[in-house]
Amino acid sequence: MAGQSLRRIQLSIERAGRDWVERTGRSFIAFRIGYCQHAPGNIPGPHMDHGVWGQQMWRVTDLCQGMERAVMAHDVRFAILNLMSDNPGMRWDIEATRRVIGYRRKMVMWP
Image 1: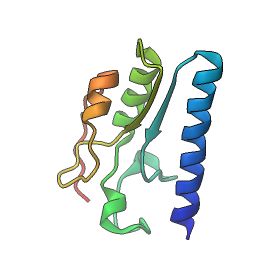
Image 2: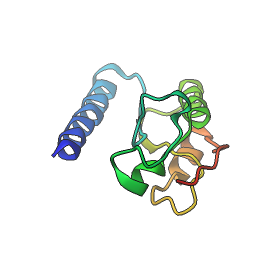
Image 3: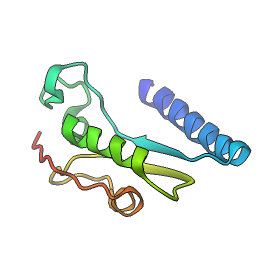
């Protein structure tokens, strides 16, 4: 059930972001980044409790580049974007992330 709670929180933040844009005229970019570890290097492996899919997310280098691109982005009022590394077999589409903020994945991670 933790996944359902996380999804509810995620949707609430995204909706609050949209409302904030409408009220203030400022921009808001939300990233769907998947699994965040509290381990140096964020290296995927069997220690992750979400199985292989949880290992197909991102590396720190790509996360930092995505955040920097979001801060530097122009003419983006509101966006919800996937932010993942270049992981073979990944099921998350990042074409919108590439198009909207110019994100280019650099790291490849096999689980």
